[in-house]
Image 1: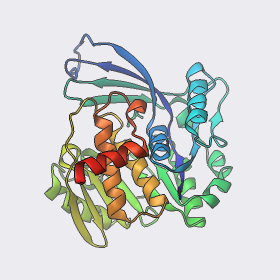
Image 2 (image 1 turned 180 degrees about the vertical axis):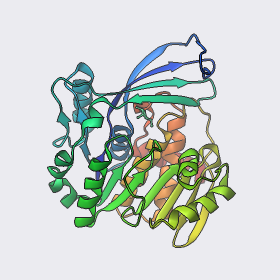
Image 3 (image 1 turned 90 degrees about the vertical axis):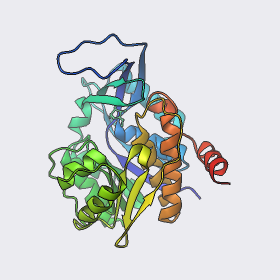
Image 4 (image 1 turned 30 degrees about the vertical axis):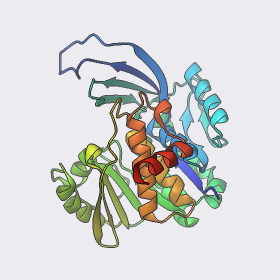
Length: 308
Ligand code: RIB
């Protein structure tokens, strides 16, 4: 039985270039072919959750430009409930500039554009979606007031709140017991704890510190080193599922979306982490954000292949 996930977040057009290396300050570099795709952490996570099998309601703010229209068409094709997506007249949708080096590592710069104008009132108007959902998924690419309103509605309707604290930034959104599951990568964990997080051992310490802030579960993703999950007072290291890396863009989004989808359908945390790990691994094998988000069948086939 599919679960229902509400995603409040950003939707972007992404402009991606493969570069021989990530340039330093003041440096120019000739890139390989240019790819235009769709992204935004919110939109990526919504599509990842949908492809992982959930019913998904997206709360996004677009403009009325050609890319915003294309994103709306994408939601229709993929079966995302877009009743609460706003298209602001005269505005542009968010934009991501992404450089990817030969190792698949990236540098991402985003301009929030319409995402930065998501209002409390837009989120409040979507309250009926919170009544039906079991999981809310948030990130840090929309105004704090919008995220705070979403948390309030989730608490009112007994919806599990997952916050992917990405990108880490100054924020008035508290990381406290209203956040059920906090997901961060190494640098976001460092930002929140002020301690270096370079591997599983440091992540276990950081997860304890983050757990003390109130969330019931802390997930620290560590790229090729897997993830550390702190839950019920214990932290556990989940090893990675090794794959050949083409592009790490949206690996975190793929992980978050699959985790949200599987928890929403009632899967227990360890099983959901296995699905999320597989979704993240599959994602890095494919270039771009949107094209790399795996579908449920692919996730299950991959798990069966690696663990049978
Ligand atoms: O997580 C990857 C995403 O971050 C990209 O799609 C980009 O748009 C930024 O939001």
